[in-house]
Image (cartoon, rainbow, N blue to C red):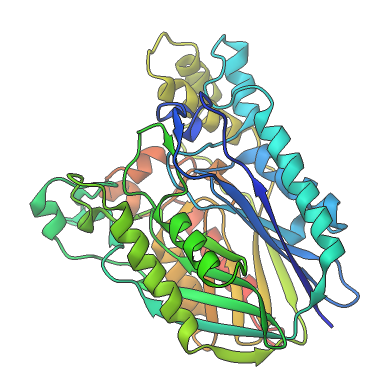
Length: 431
């Protein structure tokens, strides 16, 4: 028998706390609280598995591992059986204690994190997971479904005839000519997995690949349109927990459909909510008899032009932009932990249903690679796990130009390692 429970904890930052590692203004108002939402699955005779989504921009390096370890300790499992992801709404926190410690040593206080708030909410979330173990119930069935999302996702990298990026579609794109370009390579489908105790829904997971941001840099804290849609769906569904995971959206934004003149948050919330409901409307119901958890650790090589000497010089510079210091400290933290593996994991609910968990701001190509590696299966993909990597682009992306290679902390050589690991974790036992 497989048992299941869910947990929820508040992770809303206090007013004045840094947002997005100091890349945006600090929190000045709370439009909607932020949550840590998780599902715990306990196979008979095996340690529990946790899938957790945070309403944060990012979580990186050792802080990511601390989250996994504390959640694991709370439920009596191993850290490698815990997957933690961020939804990546921009006006939210991005904790990285080790990077902030570097900045502290140079006198740059409260750039990435302030006080011990991030540690406190991590403990609270772990306590919530531990308490959820007292409320386990049977999980007898799963359901799967999918629906096309109407006019949200578009590829950020608008390519020219020369094979290089000719324009970038940001969170909001004011240039009508750039908005008019084709959507480009995306995955238009929102995928849904429901967990049931006989005929009673226990939890519902949703997966879709897009930067979930309609406006940013406002200092107004919000889980954005994906979190708002998730919350509304939970209320509609008699408070059955709905959990949202952002897929491989490193090069996917709503820029084609977001003109930046008016706030389209409500419009996009409605479109995501419609897709959620549609994906649940005609579910494929399957008994849940066993689980299989697969892990492939990878050490993704840092960018070739990253060096401790240069990064320390940037940190010690008199630059007035907090982002310059923050970014250098985050890159240095990754450079120093490069030999600590990052887990790529997959939860196989049966031979036809797999939930793939990936690190970083991965390009959509990795999501499509996972689906193509198992064309016989329903493969849902969560990105934004350990974000110490920054963007995980394709190897050719550095020659193509554009924004993402500038904020990638790992080399283009990561592509083959990622694809190989994805293929391995998705394999059937007899392959």
